[in-house]
Image 1 (cartoon, rainbow, N blue to C red):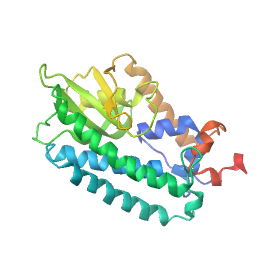
Image 2 (image 1 turned 90 degrees about the horizontal axis):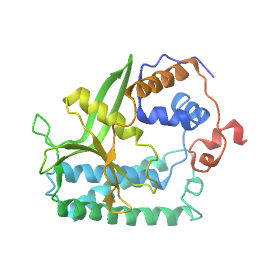
Image 3 (image 1 turned 30 degrees about the horizontal axis):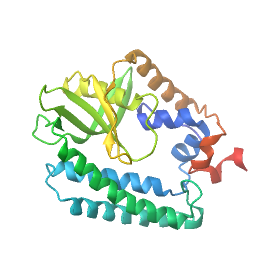
Image 4 (image 1 turned 45 degrees about the vertical axis):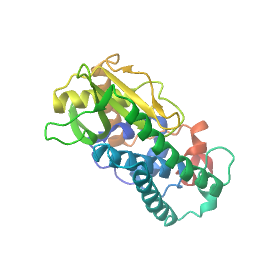
Amino acid sequence: MGSIQLVRRTSVSRLTSIARCGTAFELERVMRLPALPAGWLMQGTAIHVAADAWEQSGRTMPIGDAQEVFRTTWREEMEKADQTAFERSRWLVGGRKKVQNDLVDRYDSGQEQIATYIEYNLADTTLAPYVMPDGSIASEIGFEVEFRGVNVRGYIDVLMQDTTTGEVLVRDIKSGTKVPAVPFQLIVYRLAVLQVLGLDVTWGQFFMTRDGKPTMPIDLTTLDEAWIETWFKRQVQIEEQGLFLPDPGENCRTCGVKPHCPALK
């Protein structure tokens, strides 16, 4: 399927994608075949952009303005999706809904979730966004750190700070329904904060927009850093050597590149 270029940069999403299904990773990220659009992806993107806009405003943006950011981003994502080779009737949906019903529900619920996100955070006086050394709000912080010769890139949704103790906490915004069983993403972010800012963060949380609140604080010191370094190194080696194995199963239902998958033909 063509030569594989050496890759020494990666991310949490690349590692988790290749671990979920090597063939799907190859089809989408190596061969760059078009993926089926999905309403939940558009909703997630629009929620993150709107939440970031609100955080960057110093939490002064009115709810209606933040919802307008959501609507604008949604329209942009819809336009991109309509430009793919797939008709809307083939787009991925959650459950047994029709595509149009799913899109309408997510458009409406996404705006409600942004309102709830803002209301919850304004009412919570125990945590406030961390202010970076340059004076900017610690929202959508880009980073690139090195683990055993592999550069890992990513974005941290928000760094929060305890208003009483000054302790910093890593927060990731999730628009889905499931809390990750292992907070691998947050643990990597903890290590990135340590490398970049010199802050030794112990706790993290997922803000579940469907629930309108964050999870309880999660201890991010439970996974040995050596394991994380090994996993990133192995992920890059798998990609360099083209060792992409399929994993047919439940994940196929929500796989965007399943129209191209040899296991499903």
